Image (cartoon, one colour):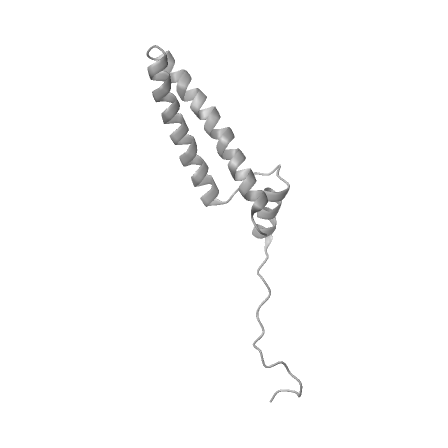
Length: 97
């Protein structure tokens, strides 16, 4: 039997916040720690791979074999890392905690 005046709506559990959620929030908003979200890391790896291949192809057309391909791949690797990191930074800052 319920006491008089008890709320008839079912109570919802509080949002689940654990050490992982706190760590992810710190990684997104403050930085200085590695991002451990599997999905983010997979997206970044795919983007870096695409940039590496594009850089190697462009370097192959513009330079001599093998120096052009290797320098293009290195440029693609650096560009892919910086661009994908910047995109993930913006996404992390916009992500709701």
